[in-house]
Image 1 (cartoon, rainbow, N blue to C red):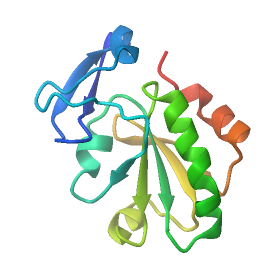
Image 2: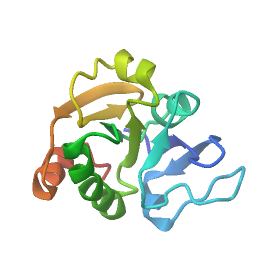
Image 3: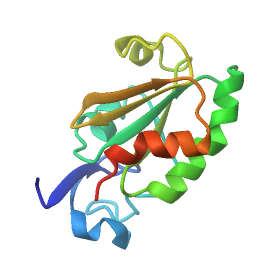
Image 4: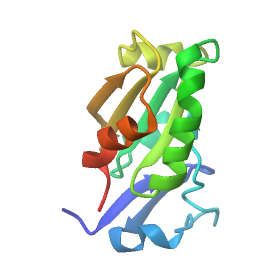
Length: 146
């Protein structure tokens, strides 16, 4: 296991290397000098998906959702609370399946909400459906960077 992780800046998409030991110290981007973690889920698009998910060695949990979906609306504050509490041990991101149907199709999203954990750009876990806070935290526990 490497002592450092690579992750993209959510603001400028520059790739940064961060020591595992310094993840909790509020790391900033080497290019734009903004914080690498905001405590909020990052909005994913076709333009930033590869940098934020594909090139990250830090696990990324993605919430595939849509604005018309009732369970997605119920899940949103639970997911946001998990981002506040668990970043930087995971990156949290949301992908609007209506705005990005090609990405939703690429990952075979058949129902929403669906959560997928990516590590090194590869899917390592998937959970369809609404999760309550305790269920979400239990499901994410094995993927947290220590």
